[in-house]
Amino acid sequence: MKILKFGGTSLQNANRVNQTTDIIRQRTENDSKLAVVVSAFAGVTDLLISAAQNAAAGDESYKTIVQTLEDIHLNIAQKSLSVQNQSRALAKIVSSLNDLHDVLHGVFLVRELSARVLDFVMSFGERLSAFIVTEVLKEKGVNAEYLDARQVIKTNDHFGQAAVLWDETNEKIQRLFKNKQKLLVITGFIASTKQNETTTLGRSGSDFTASIFGAALDVEEIQIWTDVDGVMTADPRKVPSAFSIPQITYEEAMELSHFGAQVIHPRTMQPALEKKIPIRIKNTLNPQHPGTVISDQSNNWPWSIRGLTSLDSVALVSVIGSGMIGVTGIAGRVFSALAREKINIILISQASSEHSICFAVLPEYSLQAKNALEKELKLELIERTVNKVIVEDNLSIIAVVGEKMRRTRGIAGKVFSSLGQHGINIVAIAQGSSERNISFVIDRKDLTNALNAIHSEFFKHQAENNREVKK
Image 1 (cartoon, rainbow, N blue to C red):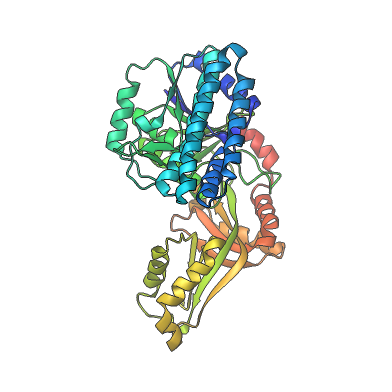
Image 2 (tube, rainbow, N blue to C red):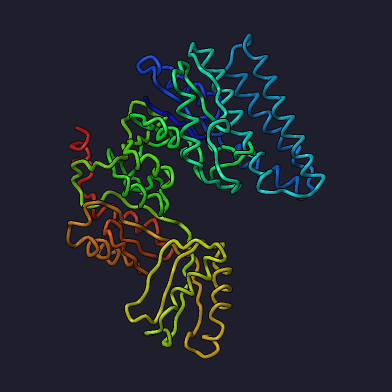
């Protein structure tokens, strides 16, 4: 059995919905054991969030957004379904959006938007897209059935990013699929508590849904369909010579994803990794391309690195002071202060002299981080054991990733030499103990130059070698 997940870019408009449903139909002809997970149509979740926030702020423009949502879904349904099959589908869409309007009107009246209500509002995106995709598949002769994942994926009540209750969820999924003959079209991203309150699974939640079902059913493969030919050696928008990677390990994919690669989120891979289920990244716009397989196997890759990725915009926060040398507990207090503020740390670098600790955070959290540290280290700042807390903005992080890096000498030298030849200064460096990742911070204005320089250094004979890899 295989799980196929289609994201918002695969469902961007009626043409994309038609392409996607054709792909599904063709695969049902060759493999009867399939299930499909879908995201909301492109841009819909953002519109739902905006509508809810506007309603909570007392802004009646939420009504206009609901009308826009109705137009999007009715337009796709009308263009994707024959006239004789439209009436029931259109009535269902209008009814669902009337329910959404009623919920938002309540938010508007009380001027309050809880995380619980926001999760319920966001659920309309996947519920509508899965319903429409199901109806289109039925029209194309596929024995399809809509499944609201809230029936089987059970979570705690941490609204916004709920944690899965695995035993109960696995049991419900396995019982549902036992002797199930129809192709299930499943809502991604959404789940429910034991009390049947709607929850969401956080960023890349639809990918996570596919992985949850895949692990519960111990499937042969999980396919994530998007708009690129798999995982690339670099972001092709910044590095034109970037090319698709045929195979990559779970660990390499996690490293790339953590530092900005948007193809798949690390959390998505965890259930699949535990069951050793391969994840294949495929392109809806180019379905014949084999894509990238993420598994525990590493193929005969001819280069010493697998790829590079970047976070375009970060801030670097530094704690500096000669009084920190040899003093135990400073680092612990620094990171505890940030944890209390729920600030995620992307990269950490500490001088061997212990004179300074620096770490990267997203720019929107830099001032909050600075204030938290100055409060935590107030006495040290007064006594001058800590000189200052400094924030540097307009920076980027690049990560060079590869399983082979652990066994290959001179990787760091080649990376930094290529940057030096292009006059690019490094602000901070970090390397994990696994040695499959070298990360460093540079000025944001140098990002594209740096990515191209490193990519060129490691993939000099890319065209020739890439042909060999594809054979």
